[in-house]
Length: 304
Ligand SMILES: [Zn+2]
Image (tube, rainbow, N blue to C red; front, top):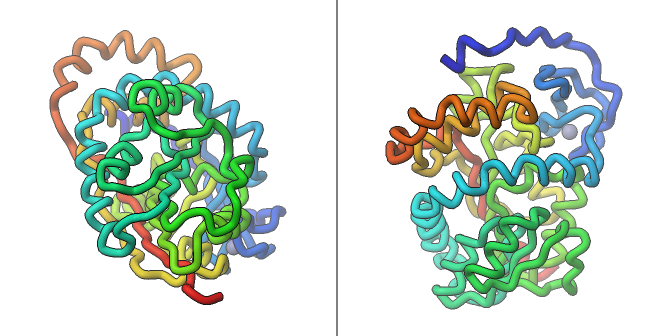
């Protein structure tokens, strides 16, 4: 149903005038136009990114608009998120069993809550006030509203930094890599996930992949570009793979897909009303997210 309703993309294979936001290259090509946005592809580092890249202020405005309507649906999937994060903590504890942990893009704090239970000394930062309010008031977590760049913790403050589904929101991936490297103590561990632009569904859907239509996302990584970001910042890569997504309710997945293929400002509230009865029935049906993630663990060298 959603597939057939998609508009045809007809991107011109033109040159992209902007420098690549990751490697600085000038050989970028227009990859696709989606939702009045242009995604360009860099042949040097493999990054696909919006062109022109919006400013952080523009992104904060979009973020405030898009987080609200989905927050309740997100909370309904708390159990799925917690199960997923428990597996991530199992992985993390094999590399860094304890210490000071910062979760960047911490959202409602489900990961931080579980990390605190396992004995990490936790802190979080996120742009969105509604989820951070929940993390602080309901879960009692040490979380800050704002960007990572405003957070400005002293260098080497953390033994672990985690970023789940967050680097794709950042318009300055090079600065992000440098800041993550600075925040970690020597020998510290970084854990990152992001939608995989080279995952199975993304490859099959090509230019129609819904990842390019997510208005909150500005950078679309594949294994090559994520490796580039991490190594350019100075990290040693411990693990870099494509993983399958979380188990979520069908309701949440449909909400998100509707949002990607229609104008969220006008269509979303109507569609949620129209679809409410079937959504209610689907609320309990669990599906795997129809998108794959890149999953990386990297280490700041112990001596640098
Ligand atoms: Zn590049």
